[in-house]
View (cartoon, helix red, strand yellow):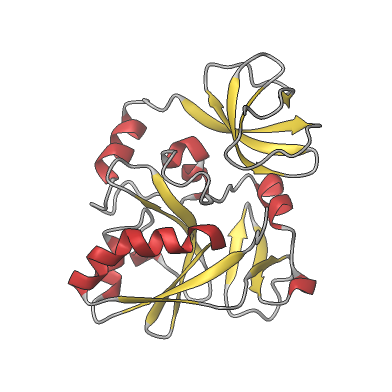
Length: 241
Protein backbone atom coordinates (compact mmCIF):
# COMPACT_ATOMS: atom_id res chain seq x y z
CA UNK A 1 0.00 0.00 0.00
CA UNK A 2 1.32 3.43 -0.89
CA UNK A 3 2.11 5.60 2.14
CA UNK A 4 1.39 2.71 4.49
CA UNK A 5 2.22 4.45 7.73
CA UNK A 6 0.63 6.41 10.57
CA UNK A 7 0.07 10.06 11.33
CA UNK A 8 -0.48 12.16 14.44
CA UNK A 9 -3.67 14.22 14.53
CA UNK A 10 -3.51 16.62 17.47
CA UNK A 11 -6.71 18.03 18.93
CA UNK A 12 -6.82 21.13 21.11
CA UNK A 13 -9.52 23.25 22.68
CA UNK A 14 -10.88 24.59 25.99
CA UNK A 15 -13.15 21.59 26.66
CA UNK A 16 -11.29 19.04 24.58
CA UNK A 17 -11.61 15.97 26.77
CA UNK A 18 -15.37 16.38 27.24
CA UNK A 19 -15.76 16.92 23.50
CA UNK A 20 -13.73 13.91 22.35
CA UNK A 21 -15.34 11.65 24.96
CA UNK A 22 -18.53 11.94 22.95
CA UNK A 23 -16.95 10.75 19.67
CA UNK A 24 -14.51 8.06 20.72
CA UNK A 25 -15.15 4.48 21.88
CA UNK A 26 -12.62 4.26 24.72
CA UNK A 27 -13.02 5.97 28.09
CA UNK A 28 -10.66 8.93 28.26
CA UNK A 29 -11.03 8.99 32.05
CA UNK A 30 -8.86 5.84 32.04
CA UNK A 31 -6.07 7.42 30.00
CA UNK A 32 -2.68 6.95 31.66
CA UNK A 33 0.38 9.21 31.27
CA UNK A 34 2.87 7.87 28.73
CA UNK A 35 0.53 5.14 27.47
CA UNK A 36 -1.37 5.29 24.19
CA UNK A 37 -4.88 3.89 24.63
CA UNK A 38 -6.45 1.86 21.79
CA UNK A 39 -9.58 3.55 20.46
CA UNK A 40 -11.96 3.85 17.56
CA UNK A 41 -14.06 6.64 16.15
CA UNK A 42 -17.50 5.52 15.00
CA UNK A 43 -20.24 7.15 12.97
CA UNK A 44 -23.91 7.25 13.90
CA UNK A 45 -24.54 3.70 12.64
CA UNK A 46 -21.70 2.38 14.79
CA UNK A 47 -19.31 1.71 11.91
CA UNK A 48 -15.64 2.44 12.48
CA UNK A 49 -14.50 5.59 10.70
CA UNK A 50 -10.96 5.14 12.00
CA UNK A 51 -9.09 3.45 14.81
CA UNK A 52 -5.67 3.47 16.37
CA UNK A 53 -4.59 5.02 19.64
CA UNK A 54 -5.01 8.20 21.68
CA UNK A 55 -2.59 9.75 24.15
CA UNK A 56 -2.27 13.01 26.04
CA UNK A 57 0.47 15.54 25.31
CA UNK A 58 0.59 18.80 27.24
CA UNK A 59 -2.98 20.16 27.04
CA UNK A 60 -3.77 18.30 23.82
CA UNK A 61 -5.00 14.86 22.84
CA UNK A 62 -3.18 13.09 20.02
CA UNK A 63 -4.88 10.55 17.77
CA UNK A 64 -2.60 8.02 16.06
CA UNK A 65 -4.30 6.98 12.82
CA UNK A 66 -3.46 5.40 9.50
CA UNK A 67 -2.40 8.21 7.18
CA UNK A 68 -5.15 7.43 4.68
CA UNK A 69 -7.97 8.17 7.17
CA UNK A 70 -6.71 11.44 8.63
CA UNK A 71 -8.67 13.59 6.18
CA UNK A 72 -11.73 11.37 6.67
CA UNK A 73 -11.56 11.86 10.45
CA UNK A 74 -11.06 15.60 10.01
CA UNK A 75 -14.16 15.82 7.83
CA UNK A 76 -16.13 13.61 10.21
CA UNK A 77 -15.28 15.62 13.34
CA UNK A 78 -15.19 19.11 11.83
CA UNK A 79 -18.89 20.07 12.32
CA UNK A 80 -18.73 19.00 15.98
CA UNK A 81 -15.32 20.61 16.57
CA UNK A 82 -16.60 23.98 15.40
CA UNK A 83 -19.44 23.86 17.90
CA UNK A 84 -17.07 22.80 20.70
CA UNK A 85 -14.37 25.34 19.68
CA UNK A 86 -11.81 22.58 19.17
CA UNK A 87 -9.17 22.40 16.47
CA UNK A 88 -7.18 19.65 14.78
CA UNK A 89 -3.68 19.74 13.29
CA UNK A 90 -1.84 16.96 11.48
CA UNK A 91 1.83 16.03 11.85
CA UNK A 92 3.71 16.40 8.55
CA UNK A 93 6.22 13.65 9.32
CA UNK A 94 5.13 10.05 8.81
CA UNK A 95 4.84 8.11 12.06
CA UNK A 96 5.87 4.48 12.42
CA UNK A 97 5.49 1.81 15.07
CA UNK A 98 8.77 0.77 16.63
CA UNK A 99 9.56 -2.50 18.40
CA UNK A 100 11.97 -0.54 20.61
CA UNK A 101 9.95 1.00 23.44
CA UNK A 102 12.94 2.19 25.46
CA UNK A 103 13.29 5.90 26.09
CA UNK A 104 10.09 6.82 24.25
CA UNK A 105 7.65 9.41 25.65
CA UNK A 106 4.61 7.30 24.81
CA UNK A 107 4.22 3.53 24.61
CA UNK A 108 1.52 1.28 23.25
CA UNK A 109 1.01 -2.15 24.75
CA UNK A 110 -0.48 -5.05 22.79
CA UNK A 111 -0.86 -8.46 24.48
CA UNK A 112 1.75 -7.42 27.03
CA UNK A 113 4.34 -6.42 24.41
CA UNK A 114 5.51 -2.82 24.41
CA UNK A 115 5.95 -0.77 21.26
CA UNK A 116 6.81 2.86 20.64
CA UNK A 117 6.20 5.48 17.98
CA UNK A 118 8.97 6.90 15.84
CA UNK A 119 9.42 9.25 12.89
CA UNK A 120 12.58 7.38 11.86
CA UNK A 121 11.87 4.87 9.11
CA UNK A 122 15.05 2.94 9.94
CA UNK A 123 13.55 2.08 13.34
CA UNK A 124 10.11 1.20 11.95
CA UNK A 125 8.34 -2.08 12.54
CA UNK A 126 6.60 -3.04 9.29
CA UNK A 127 2.98 -1.95 9.70
CA UNK A 128 1.55 -4.92 7.83
CA UNK A 129 3.60 -7.32 9.94
CA UNK A 130 2.55 -5.53 13.14
CA UNK A 131 -1.13 -5.99 12.31
CA UNK A 132 -0.73 -9.65 11.32
CA UNK A 133 1.36 -10.47 14.42
CA UNK A 134 -0.85 -8.69 16.95
CA UNK A 135 -4.27 -9.06 15.30
CA UNK A 136 -4.85 -5.33 15.80
CA UNK A 137 -6.17 -4.25 12.40
CA UNK A 138 -6.07 -0.59 11.43
CA UNK A 139 -8.89 0.86 9.38
CA UNK A 140 -7.75 2.57 6.18
CA UNK A 141 -9.60 4.68 3.63
CA UNK A 142 -10.61 1.46 1.83
CA UNK A 143 -12.31 0.01 4.92
CA UNK A 144 -13.50 3.15 6.72
CA UNK A 145 -17.19 3.06 7.61
CA UNK A 146 -17.65 -0.63 6.76
CA UNK A 147 -17.38 -2.52 10.06
CA UNK A 148 -18.64 -2.40 13.62
CA UNK A 149 -15.83 -2.46 16.22
CA UNK A 150 -16.72 -6.06 17.11
CA UNK A 151 -16.24 -7.14 13.50
CA UNK A 152 -12.62 -6.01 13.77
CA UNK A 153 -12.20 -7.66 17.20
CA UNK A 154 -11.46 -4.24 18.69
CA UNK A 155 -13.24 -5.22 21.90
CA UNK A 156 -10.45 -7.77 22.46
CA UNK A 157 -8.01 -4.85 22.83
CA UNK A 158 -10.14 -2.79 25.27
CA UNK A 159 -10.74 -0.25 22.51
CA UNK A 160 -14.42 0.02 23.41
CA UNK A 161 -15.90 0.98 26.77
CA UNK A 162 -19.40 -0.30 27.50
CA UNK A 163 -19.73 1.68 30.73
CA UNK A 164 -18.53 5.21 30.01
CA UNK A 165 -21.78 6.54 28.54
CA UNK A 166 -22.83 7.92 25.20
CA UNK A 167 -20.71 8.55 22.14
CA UNK A 168 -21.70 8.76 18.49
CA UNK A 169 -22.78 5.27 17.41
CA UNK A 170 -22.72 3.92 20.99
CA UNK A 171 -26.28 2.63 20.95
CA UNK A 172 -25.68 0.47 17.88
CA UNK A 173 -22.35 -0.87 19.17
CA UNK A 174 -23.80 -1.69 22.60
CA UNK A 175 -26.90 -3.35 21.16
CA UNK A 176 -24.78 -5.54 18.89
CA UNK A 177 -22.61 -6.53 21.85
CA UNK A 178 -25.38 -7.39 24.28
CA UNK A 179 -27.69 -9.08 21.79
CA UNK A 180 -24.97 -11.10 20.13
CA UNK A 181 -25.94 -9.61 16.79
CA UNK A 182 -22.45 -9.51 15.28
CA UNK A 183 -22.38 -11.95 12.38
CA UNK A 184 -18.87 -11.25 11.11
CA UNK A 185 -15.48 -11.29 12.83
CA UNK A 186 -11.81 -10.80 12.07
CA UNK A 187 -9.75 -13.90 11.33
CA UNK A 188 -6.16 -14.65 10.38
CA UNK A 189 -5.77 -16.37 7.04
CA UNK A 190 -2.86 -17.64 4.99
CA UNK A 191 -2.60 -16.74 1.32
CA UNK A 192 -0.35 -17.06 -1.69
CA UNK A 193 -2.18 -14.52 -3.81
CA UNK A 194 -0.62 -11.69 -5.76
CA UNK A 195 -1.73 -8.07 -5.47
CA UNK A 196 -4.10 -8.52 -2.55
CA UNK A 197 -5.29 -5.04 -1.59
CA UNK A 198 -7.02 -3.77 1.52
CA UNK A 199 -10.78 -3.79 1.00
CA UNK A 200 -10.68 -6.58 -1.61
CA UNK A 201 -13.39 -9.22 -1.48
CA UNK A 202 -11.87 -12.67 -1.69
CA UNK A 203 -12.84 -16.27 -0.99
CA UNK A 204 -11.47 -18.90 1.34
CA UNK A 205 -10.74 -22.50 0.42
CA UNK A 206 -14.22 -23.30 1.77
CA UNK A 207 -15.87 -20.86 -0.63
CA UNK A 208 -16.73 -18.30 2.08
CA UNK A 209 -16.55 -14.63 1.16
CA UNK A 210 -14.13 -12.45 3.10
CA UNK A 211 -12.96 -8.83 3.09
CA UNK A 212 -9.24 -8.11 3.44
CA UNK A 213 -8.46 -5.65 6.23
CA UNK A 214 -4.69 -6.13 6.49
CA UNK A 215 -2.33 -8.13 4.31
CA UNK A 216 1.27 -9.26 4.52
CA UNK A 217 3.39 -11.34 2.16
CA UNK A 218 1.67 -14.63 2.96
CA UNK A 219 -0.98 -13.88 5.60
CA UNK A 220 -3.93 -11.56 5.94
CA UNK A 221 -6.53 -10.38 8.42
CA UNK A 222 -9.97 -10.83 6.92
CA UNK A 223 -13.53 -10.16 8.06
CA UNK A 224 -15.53 -13.32 7.65
CA UNK A 225 -18.97 -14.61 8.65
CA UNK A 226 -18.83 -16.16 12.12
CA UNK A 227 -20.71 -19.19 10.79
CA UNK A 228 -17.98 -19.96 8.24
CA UNK A 229 -15.38 -22.67 8.69
CA UNK A 230 -12.40 -20.80 10.15
CA UNK A 231 -10.01 -23.72 10.61
CA UNK A 232 -6.65 -23.23 8.87
CA UNK A 233 -8.06 -20.53 6.64
CA UNK A 234 -6.48 -19.92 3.24
CA UNK A 235 -7.44 -17.37 0.64
CA UNK A 236 -7.60 -19.01 -2.76
CA UNK A 237 -9.56 -16.65 -5.01
CA UNK A 238 -8.13 -13.60 -6.73
CA UNK A 239 -9.81 -10.31 -5.72
CA UNK A 240 -13.15 -9.67 -7.40
CA UNK A 241 -12.94 -7.27 -10.32
